[in-house]
Image (cartoon, rainbow, N blue to C red; front, top):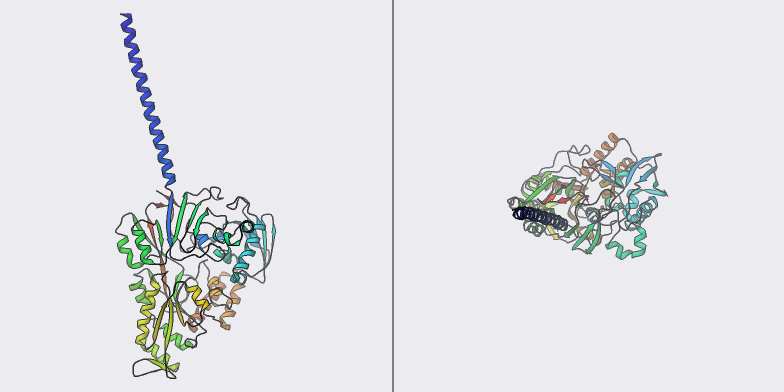
Length: 523
């Protein structure tokens, strides 16, 4: 009896032990499964993006790609309201009208582990000026002194716009000591910056692959890797987004949005930006040097049709260089298409209409070459609409599509006009655009504009601190631009960006600088 009792109890105990063991095994198995799932999720934290502009190199002092790809950073940056804030700088201020002091963050290292200090910043800024000549004019630096984390910059004269100019991506801070070790050519394709991502592989004009910088000063990036591809064909970009070959795609064609939005996993963000689409005039061309001819051409731009029919409502008609919603935007009325007035202006410029309806002067028909490019899909369409309306006024427009408009306009003098797009107030201020597009040494002044009246206003703006006075001077400059028709502004376009719903903690921003960030994550 006792023996039987003992056996029953033993069996019961054994069964309990087996149950506990099995439960423990299941728990361990689930734990391992969860752990493997987390590891798999970490491995899948990769993002693919497509940008509309090619990048021949990754030199941050000649290309915006490094800052957009999270490789480099600047001393100062813009916040979500386009106000200037510190980035690699903790604080800054002026001692007098020409002396600026900047305190560099003490906890920042380059991607190779070297500490960032004022001497490194000084060397990087010196490199940027040597590589990009236009920066010398825009920064107006007379001298720099480095002491630990403190950098003192003395400008050539009173220059309150210096902080705004230090937001410029071309002033990105890089480790020049690494360039000495690597050599300039290798460094230009794999720069060492302070950003959340470092270069893994770069293929010129095709793509850049980056990996996270675990030692990033502002916190470990959420994304492990990212591939940024370059493709100037808007339709190819749209198809890649629809096929989910890319998570984020910039500058989608407006006409493709409706189809994309039928997919519940895809979203299109249309963000009001700080950009203008406009027509550049080549001041070296005898055909458009007369302001009356430019004024006539200005009246042949159908701004409403561009906004409604080409941009499909993702733009508003422009009345000057700066978005009319900005404090320093122009008060001028938006010019409407006016064929009759355009013909009258051409007559005042000495042109007569021949039997074929063509405008001619001294026996020569008015024939103009218009440059355009495909990276922004609406620009060739704007060129075609403009061509059609000019034909009604007896002006023949020859459209020439080029791959790289910036290079073509600089290297060639025979063009008359060009469709163009530029971020005219990327730093919440108009001085950048005015200095780069209208001064004699400005990097964007490919039309060789040199107007004394304009130069004086910009000179006064550059030394003015008072915000109200700066606003008025900027508006004065816009008035001159419109009066002299130095450019013809068509529309203020939205930034159209495709975003896969797997992307989280990220939205496209108006300034178009800070794209791949350490806070971007995936579901």
